[in-house]
Picture 1 (cartoon, helix red, strand yellow):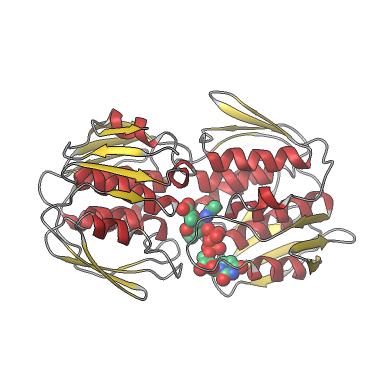
Picture 2 (spheres, rainbow, N blue to C red):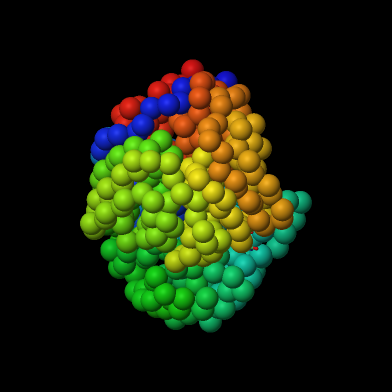
Length: 418
Ligand code: EPU
Protein backbone atom coordinates (compact mmCIF):
# COMPACT_ATOMS: atom_id res chain seq x y z
CA UNK A 1 0.00 0.00 0.00
CA UNK A 2 1.54 3.31 -1.06
CA UNK A 3 1.66 6.39 1.16
CA UNK A 4 2.75 9.98 0.82
CA UNK A 5 5.13 11.10 3.54
CA UNK A 6 5.26 14.87 3.97
CA UNK A 7 7.56 16.79 6.30
CA UNK A 8 6.12 20.25 6.79
CA UNK A 9 7.80 23.59 7.17
CA UNK A 10 9.08 24.50 3.69
CA UNK A 11 7.62 27.50 1.87
CA UNK A 12 6.63 26.44 -1.66
CA UNK A 13 8.40 28.56 -4.25
CA UNK A 14 8.83 28.31 -8.00
CA UNK A 15 7.07 27.76 -11.31
CA UNK A 16 4.68 24.99 -12.21
CA UNK A 17 2.98 24.12 -15.47
CA UNK A 18 -0.58 22.91 -14.90
CA UNK A 19 -1.76 19.50 -16.07
CA UNK A 20 -4.70 19.17 -18.45
CA UNK A 21 -8.15 19.02 -16.90
CA UNK A 22 -9.40 15.63 -15.72
CA UNK A 23 -13.03 16.74 -15.76
CA UNK A 24 -12.70 17.94 -19.37
CA UNK A 25 -10.67 15.03 -20.62
CA UNK A 26 -13.12 12.37 -19.39
CA UNK A 27 -16.25 13.57 -21.27
CA UNK A 28 -14.09 14.42 -24.30
CA UNK A 29 -12.78 10.84 -24.37
CA UNK A 30 -16.41 9.67 -24.33
CA UNK A 31 -17.20 12.16 -27.12
CA UNK A 32 -14.39 10.73 -29.28
CA UNK A 33 -16.51 7.59 -29.48
CA UNK A 34 -19.05 9.49 -31.58
CA UNK A 35 -16.60 10.36 -34.37
CA UNK A 36 -15.81 7.07 -36.09
CA UNK A 37 -12.40 8.51 -36.99
CA UNK A 38 -9.16 9.23 -35.15
CA UNK A 39 -9.20 11.99 -32.54
CA UNK A 40 -5.93 13.31 -31.15
CA UNK A 41 -6.14 14.80 -27.67
CA UNK A 42 -3.25 16.94 -26.51
CA UNK A 43 -2.61 18.05 -22.92
CA UNK A 44 -4.51 14.96 -21.70
CA UNK A 45 -3.44 14.29 -18.09
CA UNK A 46 -1.97 10.90 -17.19
CA UNK A 47 -4.26 9.82 -14.36
CA UNK A 48 -5.83 6.61 -13.15
CA UNK A 49 -9.31 7.95 -14.09
CA UNK A 50 -8.07 8.62 -17.63
CA UNK A 51 -6.77 5.04 -17.89
CA UNK A 52 -10.13 3.81 -16.57
CA UNK A 53 -11.85 5.76 -19.38
CA UNK A 54 -9.48 4.21 -21.91
CA UNK A 55 -10.38 0.74 -20.61
CA UNK A 56 -14.06 1.52 -21.22
CA UNK A 57 -13.23 2.69 -24.77
CA UNK A 58 -11.18 -0.47 -25.38
CA UNK A 59 -13.98 -2.64 -24.06
CA UNK A 60 -16.50 -1.26 -26.59
CA UNK A 61 -14.04 -1.68 -29.47
CA UNK A 62 -12.07 1.60 -29.65
CA UNK A 63 -8.30 1.89 -29.52
CA UNK A 64 -6.44 4.42 -27.33
CA UNK A 65 -2.80 5.06 -27.98
CA UNK A 66 -0.98 7.10 -25.31
CA UNK A 67 2.29 8.88 -26.04
CA UNK A 68 4.16 11.59 -24.14
CA UNK A 69 2.37 14.39 -25.97
CA UNK A 70 -1.10 13.07 -26.68
CA UNK A 71 -3.62 10.27 -26.77
CA UNK A 72 -5.08 9.09 -30.07
CA UNK A 73 -8.54 7.52 -29.91
CA UNK A 74 -9.74 5.46 -32.87
CA UNK A 75 -13.43 4.65 -32.89
CA UNK A 76 -14.08 3.19 -36.37
CA UNK A 77 -15.61 -0.01 -35.06
CA UNK A 78 -17.83 -0.36 -32.06
CA UNK A 79 -18.05 -4.06 -31.25
CA UNK A 80 -19.73 -4.11 -27.84
CA UNK A 81 -22.50 -2.06 -26.23
CA UNK A 82 -22.40 -3.31 -22.63
CA UNK A 83 -19.95 -1.73 -20.20
CA UNK A 84 -19.02 -4.25 -17.49
CA UNK A 85 -19.81 -3.46 -13.87
CA UNK A 86 -16.16 -3.44 -12.76
CA UNK A 87 -15.38 -0.67 -15.28
CA UNK A 88 -18.52 1.31 -14.40
CA UNK A 89 -17.61 1.18 -10.70
CA UNK A 90 -14.13 2.61 -11.22
CA UNK A 91 -15.31 6.22 -11.47
CA UNK A 92 -18.36 8.46 -11.61
CA UNK A 93 -17.59 9.62 -15.15
CA UNK A 94 -18.24 6.16 -16.55
CA UNK A 95 -21.90 7.26 -16.81
CA UNK A 96 -20.91 9.82 -19.47
CA UNK A 97 -20.33 6.94 -21.88
CA UNK A 98 -24.07 6.25 -21.83
CA UNK A 99 -25.03 9.38 -23.81
CA UNK A 100 -22.15 8.88 -26.24
CA UNK A 101 -22.92 5.19 -26.82
CA UNK A 102 -26.61 5.94 -27.39
CA UNK A 103 -25.60 8.63 -29.89
CA UNK A 104 -23.30 6.26 -31.74
CA UNK A 105 -25.04 2.87 -31.60
CA UNK A 106 -28.51 3.48 -30.15
CA UNK A 107 -27.92 1.04 -27.33
CA UNK A 108 -25.92 0.64 -24.15
CA UNK A 109 -26.07 -1.39 -20.94
CA UNK A 110 -24.47 0.09 -17.84
CA UNK A 111 -24.89 -0.01 -14.07
CA UNK A 112 -24.69 2.76 -11.48
CA UNK A 113 -21.29 4.43 -11.58
CA UNK A 114 -18.68 4.54 -8.80
CA UNK A 115 -16.54 7.54 -7.87
CA UNK A 116 -15.68 9.51 -4.73
CA UNK A 117 -17.98 8.98 -1.75
CA UNK A 118 -19.41 12.46 -1.44
CA UNK A 119 -22.93 11.44 -0.40
CA UNK A 120 -25.69 10.07 -2.64
CA UNK A 121 -24.91 10.64 -6.31
CA UNK A 122 -28.05 9.65 -8.23
CA UNK A 123 -28.34 9.66 -12.04
CA UNK A 124 -32.09 10.38 -12.25
CA UNK A 125 -31.59 13.60 -14.26
CA UNK A 126 -29.42 11.77 -16.80
CA UNK A 127 -32.01 9.04 -17.33
CA UNK A 128 -35.05 11.36 -17.44
CA UNK A 129 -33.36 13.49 -20.10
CA UNK A 130 -32.28 10.53 -22.23
CA UNK A 131 -35.84 9.14 -22.05
CA UNK A 132 -37.09 12.50 -23.37
CA UNK A 133 -34.77 12.02 -26.33
CA UNK A 134 -36.35 8.69 -27.19
CA UNK A 135 -34.42 6.19 -25.06
CA UNK A 136 -36.24 3.19 -23.68
CA UNK A 137 -34.55 2.54 -20.31
CA UNK A 138 -35.17 -0.52 -18.16
CA UNK A 139 -33.51 -1.46 -14.92
CA UNK A 140 -33.02 -5.15 -14.23
CA UNK A 141 -30.88 -6.81 -11.52
CA UNK A 142 -28.66 -3.74 -11.13
CA UNK A 143 -28.24 -3.29 -14.87
CA UNK A 144 -29.54 -0.24 -16.73
CA UNK A 145 -30.48 -1.36 -20.23
CA UNK A 146 -30.97 1.51 -22.70
CA UNK A 147 -32.11 1.33 -26.29
CA UNK A 148 -33.17 3.92 -28.83
CA UNK A 149 -35.16 2.09 -31.54
CA UNK A 150 -34.41 4.48 -34.43
CA UNK A 151 -32.33 7.58 -33.89
CA UNK A 152 -32.44 9.81 -30.80
CA UNK A 153 -34.57 12.91 -31.34
CA UNK A 154 -34.13 16.46 -30.15
CA UNK A 155 -36.04 17.57 -27.05
CA UNK A 156 -36.56 20.53 -24.72
CA UNK A 157 -35.05 19.61 -21.39
CA UNK A 158 -35.20 21.69 -18.23
CA UNK A 159 -32.87 20.38 -15.58
CA UNK A 160 -34.06 20.71 -11.95
CA UNK A 161 -30.41 21.46 -11.01
CA UNK A 162 -27.50 22.39 -13.32
CA UNK A 163 -25.85 18.97 -13.07
CA UNK A 164 -22.49 18.82 -14.84
CA UNK A 165 -22.76 15.12 -15.72
CA UNK A 166 -26.39 15.30 -16.88
CA UNK A 167 -25.62 18.33 -19.09
CA UNK A 168 -22.69 16.41 -20.63
CA UNK A 169 -24.74 13.26 -21.22
CA UNK A 170 -27.51 15.22 -22.94
CA UNK A 171 -25.02 17.05 -25.18
CA UNK A 172 -23.33 13.76 -26.10
CA UNK A 173 -26.61 12.16 -27.11
CA UNK A 174 -27.95 15.31 -28.81
CA UNK A 175 -25.09 16.08 -31.22
CA UNK A 176 -26.05 13.18 -33.50
CA UNK A 177 -29.80 13.21 -32.72
CA UNK A 178 -32.52 14.09 -35.19
CA UNK A 179 -33.46 17.76 -34.67
CA UNK A 180 -32.78 20.41 -32.08
CA UNK A 181 -32.20 19.91 -28.36
CA UNK A 182 -32.51 22.77 -25.90
CA UNK A 183 -31.12 22.40 -22.37
CA UNK A 184 -32.48 24.91 -19.88
CA UNK A 185 -30.72 25.38 -16.54
CA UNK A 186 -27.64 23.72 -18.06
CA UNK A 187 -24.39 23.53 -16.09
CA UNK A 188 -22.08 26.42 -16.97
CA UNK A 189 -18.77 24.91 -15.85
CA UNK A 190 -15.73 25.67 -18.07
CA UNK A 191 -15.37 21.91 -18.71
CA UNK A 192 -18.78 21.97 -20.46
CA UNK A 193 -17.41 24.66 -22.80
CA UNK A 194 -14.31 22.53 -23.40
CA UNK A 195 -16.45 19.51 -24.31
CA UNK A 196 -18.49 21.67 -26.69
CA UNK A 197 -15.28 23.13 -28.16
CA UNK A 198 -14.10 19.60 -28.93
CA UNK A 199 -17.45 18.58 -30.40
CA UNK A 200 -17.56 21.70 -32.60
CA UNK A 201 -14.07 20.81 -33.85
CA UNK A 202 -15.62 17.46 -34.87
CA UNK A 203 -18.40 19.21 -36.79
CA UNK A 204 -21.14 19.47 -34.14
CA UNK A 205 -23.49 22.46 -34.04
CA UNK A 206 -23.77 23.79 -30.48
CA UNK A 207 -24.40 27.26 -29.13
CA UNK A 208 -24.91 28.76 -25.69
CA UNK A 209 -22.35 26.67 -23.76
CA UNK A 210 -21.14 28.64 -20.76
CA UNK A 211 -24.71 30.01 -20.43
CA UNK A 212 -27.75 28.38 -18.83
CA UNK A 213 -29.43 27.65 -22.18
CA UNK A 214 -27.56 25.40 -24.57
CA UNK A 215 -28.90 24.65 -28.06
CA UNK A 216 -27.68 21.62 -30.00
CA UNK A 217 -28.65 20.96 -33.62
CA UNK A 218 -28.16 17.26 -34.27
CA UNK A 219 -26.39 15.99 -37.39
CA UNK A 220 -25.77 12.51 -38.71
CA UNK A 221 -22.06 12.08 -38.39
CA UNK A 222 -19.08 13.73 -36.75
CA UNK A 223 -15.49 13.57 -37.92
CA UNK A 224 -12.16 13.25 -36.13
CA UNK A 225 -10.05 16.21 -35.01
CA UNK A 226 -7.01 17.30 -33.03
CA UNK A 227 -7.84 19.13 -29.81
CA UNK A 228 -5.99 20.45 -26.78
CA UNK A 229 -7.65 19.86 -23.40
CA UNK A 230 -7.99 22.95 -21.17
CA UNK A 231 -5.79 23.31 -18.06
CA UNK A 232 -7.09 21.83 -14.82
CA UNK A 233 -8.59 24.65 -12.76
CA UNK A 234 -8.93 22.47 -9.66
CA UNK A 235 -5.30 21.33 -9.82
CA UNK A 236 -4.58 25.07 -10.16
CA UNK A 237 -6.62 25.80 -7.02
CA UNK A 238 -4.72 23.00 -5.27
CA UNK A 239 -1.24 24.38 -5.92
CA UNK A 240 -2.34 27.95 -5.17
CA UNK A 241 -3.83 26.80 -1.83
CA UNK A 242 -0.67 24.89 -0.93
CA UNK A 243 1.51 27.89 -1.75
CA UNK A 244 -0.74 30.29 0.16
CA UNK A 245 -0.79 27.96 3.19
CA UNK A 246 3.02 27.70 3.28
CA UNK A 247 3.45 31.47 2.80
CA UNK A 248 5.26 30.88 -0.47
CA UNK A 249 5.36 32.23 -3.98
CA UNK A 250 4.36 30.57 -7.26
CA UNK A 251 3.95 31.21 -10.96
CA UNK A 252 1.36 28.82 -12.40
CA UNK A 253 1.93 28.40 -16.13
CA UNK A 254 -0.52 26.93 -18.64
CA UNK A 255 -3.26 28.12 -16.27
CA UNK A 256 -6.78 29.22 -17.09
CA UNK A 257 -7.16 32.38 -15.07
CA UNK A 258 -10.68 33.24 -16.25
CA UNK A 259 -12.04 29.79 -15.32
CA UNK A 260 -10.40 30.10 -11.90
CA UNK A 261 -11.78 33.56 -11.11
CA UNK A 262 -14.49 32.34 -8.62
CA UNK A 263 -11.74 30.63 -6.60
CA UNK A 264 -9.14 33.38 -6.95
CA UNK A 265 -11.52 36.12 -5.82
CA UNK A 266 -12.04 34.29 -2.50
CA UNK A 267 -8.37 33.34 -2.05
CA UNK A 268 -7.45 37.00 -2.50
CA UNK A 269 -9.42 37.82 0.65
CA UNK A 270 -6.82 35.92 2.70
CA UNK A 271 -4.32 38.70 2.00
CA UNK A 272 -2.30 36.95 -0.74
CA UNK A 273 -1.17 39.04 -3.69
CA UNK A 274 -2.46 37.45 -6.88
CA UNK A 275 -1.89 38.67 -10.42
CA UNK A 276 -3.31 36.84 -13.40
CA UNK A 277 -2.82 37.12 -17.13
CA UNK A 278 -4.61 34.90 -19.63
CA UNK A 279 -2.52 31.78 -19.04
CA UNK A 280 -0.33 32.62 -16.03
CA UNK A 281 -1.15 33.21 -12.37
CA UNK A 282 1.32 34.65 -9.87
CA UNK A 283 0.67 34.31 -6.13
CA UNK A 284 2.71 35.60 -3.19
CA UNK A 285 1.78 35.00 0.42
CA UNK A 286 4.37 36.52 2.71
CA UNK A 287 2.66 36.35 6.09
CA UNK A 288 -0.04 34.47 8.03
CA UNK A 289 -3.25 34.25 6.01
CA UNK A 290 -6.34 36.16 7.14
CA UNK A 291 -9.61 34.29 7.62
CA UNK A 292 -12.23 34.91 4.94
CA UNK A 293 -14.95 37.17 6.35
CA UNK A 294 -17.81 36.26 4.03
CA UNK A 295 -19.38 32.77 4.10
CA UNK A 296 -17.66 30.54 1.52
CA UNK A 297 -20.66 28.99 -0.22
CA UNK A 298 -20.04 26.27 -2.80
CA UNK A 299 -22.30 26.79 -5.81
CA UNK A 300 -22.48 25.70 -9.45
CA UNK A 301 -20.12 27.71 -11.70
CA UNK A 302 -19.58 30.68 -11.62
CA UNK A 303 -19.97 30.22 -7.86
CA UNK A 304 -17.19 28.98 -5.60
CA UNK A 305 -16.32 25.41 -6.76
CA UNK A 306 -17.14 22.52 -4.44
CA UNK A 307 -13.96 20.80 -5.66
CA UNK A 308 -11.87 23.58 -4.10
CA UNK A 309 -13.65 23.64 -0.72
CA UNK A 310 -11.35 21.15 1.04
CA UNK A 311 -8.26 22.77 -0.48
CA UNK A 312 -9.05 26.29 0.67
CA UNK A 313 -10.04 24.89 4.07
CA UNK A 314 -6.59 23.30 4.42
CA UNK A 315 -5.07 26.76 3.95
CA UNK A 316 -7.54 28.49 6.30
CA UNK A 317 -7.09 26.13 9.27
CA UNK A 318 -3.94 28.09 10.19
CA UNK A 319 -5.30 31.53 9.20
CA UNK A 320 -5.85 34.37 11.64
CA UNK A 321 -9.55 34.34 12.58
CA UNK A 322 -12.63 32.25 11.80
CA UNK A 323 -13.84 31.24 8.32
CA UNK A 324 -17.20 29.64 7.60
CA UNK A 325 -17.86 27.20 4.76
CA UNK A 326 -21.25 26.15 3.40
CA UNK A 327 -21.25 23.06 1.16
CA UNK A 328 -24.27 23.19 -1.13
CA UNK A 329 -23.43 20.67 -3.87
CA UNK A 330 -22.69 17.38 -2.11
CA UNK A 331 -24.17 16.06 1.16
CA UNK A 332 -21.01 14.47 2.43
CA UNK A 333 -18.03 16.56 1.42
CA UNK A 334 -16.45 17.28 4.79
CA UNK A 335 -14.82 13.89 5.30
CA UNK A 336 -11.34 15.47 5.19
CA UNK A 337 -12.10 17.47 8.34
CA UNK A 338 -11.43 14.48 10.65
CA UNK A 339 -7.86 14.29 9.35
CA UNK A 340 -7.36 18.05 9.64
CA UNK A 341 -8.66 17.96 13.24
CA UNK A 342 -6.29 15.08 14.00
CA UNK A 343 -3.49 17.39 12.83
CA UNK A 344 -4.61 20.06 15.30
CA UNK A 345 -7.18 22.08 13.31
CA UNK A 346 -10.24 23.53 15.06
CA UNK A 347 -13.23 22.69 12.81
CA UNK A 348 -16.88 22.24 13.81
CA UNK A 349 -19.14 20.66 11.20
CA UNK A 350 -22.90 21.17 11.54
CA UNK A 351 -24.79 19.81 8.54
CA UNK A 352 -23.83 21.90 5.51
CA UNK A 353 -21.71 24.30 7.56
CA UNK A 354 -18.12 24.02 8.73
CA UNK A 355 -16.74 26.61 11.13
CA UNK A 356 -12.96 26.83 10.91
CA UNK A 357 -11.19 28.68 13.74
CA UNK A 358 -7.62 29.36 12.70
CA UNK A 359 -4.95 27.80 14.94
CA UNK A 360 -1.28 28.82 15.21
CA UNK A 361 0.09 25.53 13.91
CA UNK A 362 -0.70 21.99 12.82
CA UNK A 363 1.18 18.84 13.80
CA UNK A 364 2.12 15.87 11.64
CA UNK A 365 -0.10 12.78 12.02
CA UNK A 366 -1.02 9.55 10.27
CA UNK A 367 -4.12 10.22 8.17
CA UNK A 368 -6.13 8.50 5.46
CA UNK A 369 -7.43 10.13 2.27
CA UNK A 370 -11.09 9.27 1.74
CA UNK A 371 -11.68 11.14 -1.53
CA UNK A 372 -9.69 12.93 -4.21
CA UNK A 373 -9.84 16.60 -3.19
CA UNK A 374 -9.95 15.78 0.52
CA UNK A 375 -6.73 13.78 0.04
CA UNK A 376 -5.04 16.70 -1.73
CA UNK A 377 -6.17 18.96 1.12
CA UNK A 378 -4.35 16.66 3.54
CA UNK A 379 -1.15 17.15 1.52
CA UNK A 380 -1.67 20.93 1.69
CA UNK A 381 -2.19 20.82 5.46
CA UNK A 382 0.79 18.49 5.95
CA UNK A 383 3.08 20.97 4.17
CA UNK A 384 2.33 23.55 6.89
CA UNK A 385 2.48 21.12 9.84
CA UNK A 386 5.29 20.63 12.33
CA UNK A 387 6.88 17.24 11.71
CA UNK A 388 5.96 14.31 9.55
CA UNK A 389 2.55 13.38 8.14
CA UNK A 390 1.85 10.01 6.53
CA UNK A 391 -1.11 10.01 4.16
CA UNK A 392 -2.66 6.67 3.19
CA UNK A 393 -5.44 6.00 0.68
CA UNK A 394 -3.50 7.87 -1.99
CA UNK A 395 -5.12 5.99 -4.86
CA UNK A 396 -7.86 8.63 -4.40
CA UNK A 397 -5.30 11.39 -5.01
CA UNK A 398 -3.83 9.62 -8.06
CA UNK A 399 -7.27 9.73 -9.70
CA UNK A 400 -6.91 13.47 -10.23
CA UNK A 401 -3.29 14.60 -9.88
CA UNK A 402 -0.46 13.77 -12.20
CA UNK A 403 2.40 12.81 -9.84
CA UNK A 404 1.44 15.23 -7.09
CA UNK A 405 4.69 14.50 -5.24
CA UNK A 406 6.84 15.59 -8.23
CA UNK A 407 4.88 18.83 -8.56
CA UNK A 408 5.16 19.64 -4.84
CA UNK A 409 8.84 18.65 -4.71
CA UNK A 410 9.62 20.86 -7.72
CA UNK A 411 8.32 23.76 -5.61
CA UNK A 412 10.57 22.83 -2.68
CA UNK A 413 8.11 20.76 -0.61
CA UNK A 414 9.47 17.82 1.35
CA UNK A 415 7.32 14.92 0.13
CA UNK A 416 7.94 11.37 -0.98
CA UNK A 417 5.91 8.35 -2.03
CA UNK A 418 6.75 5.19 -0.15
N1 EPU B 1 -27.46 15.03 -8.95
C1 EPU B 1 -28.70 14.43 -8.81
N2 EPU B 1 -29.18 13.71 -9.86
C2 EPU B 1 -28.50 13.57 -11.03
C3 EPU B 1 -27.24 14.18 -11.16
C4 EPU B 1 -26.73 14.91 -10.10
O1 EPU B 1 -29.32 14.55 -7.78
O2 EPU B 1 -29.00 12.89 -11.95
C5 EPU B 1 -26.90 15.80 -7.82
C6 EPU B 1 -25.65 15.14 -7.25
O3 EPU B 1 -25.96 14.12 -6.35
C7 EPU B 1 -24.94 16.29 -6.60
C8 EPU B 1 -25.28 17.47 -7.52
O4 EPU B 1 -26.45 17.06 -8.27
O5 EPU B 1 -25.44 16.52 -5.33
C9 EPU B 1 -24.18 17.87 -8.46
O6 EPU B 1 -23.80 16.79 -9.27
P1 EPU B 1 -23.22 16.96 -10.74
O7 EPU B 1 -23.98 16.04 -11.62
O8 EPU B 1 -23.16 18.41 -11.10
O9 EPU B 1 -21.73 16.44 -10.54
P2 EPU B 1 -20.98 15.30 -11.34
O10 EPU B 1 -21.19 15.45 -12.79
O11 EPU B 1 -21.23 14.00 -10.69
C10 EPU B 1 -18.83 16.76 -11.65
C11 EPU B 1 -17.36 16.60 -11.36
C12 EPU B 1 -17.13 16.67 -9.87
C13 EPU B 1 -17.64 18.01 -9.36
C14 EPU B 1 -19.11 18.20 -9.74
C15 EPU B 1 -19.66 19.56 -9.36
C16 EPU B 1 -16.55 15.21 -13.14
C17 EPU B 1 -16.00 13.91 -13.55
N3 EPU B 1 -16.92 15.32 -11.86
O12 EPU B 1 -19.48 15.70 -10.98
O13 EPU B 1 -15.73 16.58 -9.68
O14 EPU B 1 -17.49 18.07 -7.97
O15 EPU B 1 -19.27 18.04 -11.17
O16 EPU B 1 -18.92 20.56 -9.96
O17 EPU B 1 -16.66 16.13 -13.93
C18 EPU B 1 -13.72 15.96 -8.62
O18 EPU B 1 -13.11 16.25 -9.66
O19 EPU B 1 -13.14 15.72 -7.53
C19 EPU B 1 -15.18 15.88 -8.64
C20 EPU B 1 -15.88 15.23 -7.71
